[in-house]
Image 1 (cartoon, rainbow, N blue to C red):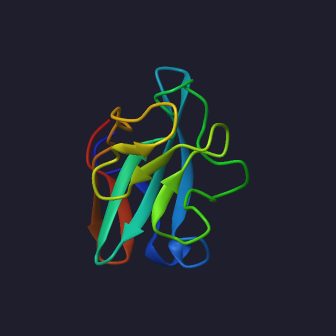
Image 2 (image 1 turned 90 degrees about the vertical axis):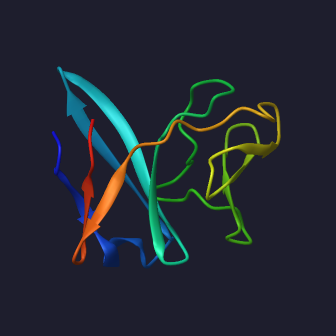
Length: 112
């Protein structure tokens, strides 16, 4: 699915992030993209602690300050740039990156 369109940059305006559920070999693959300064990063939407989604509501992946990615299930905080857990039950573990690229105003999957 290289080059699959995920969303548009303006889809990140409200919350700073966007969840996309892809399909691969008949299975649902939840990922999300997040704006980090001038960069857009992608991660699998699965906390390394319990393999649950990070967000508790649609497209809500950042903490109240907008500084860290936040797992609503167990309170883990992740560095946006690296996906590394800096606080919470999975401290030291990391989110799984999902490679994305930006083509004009469109965010695309770099690979699956």
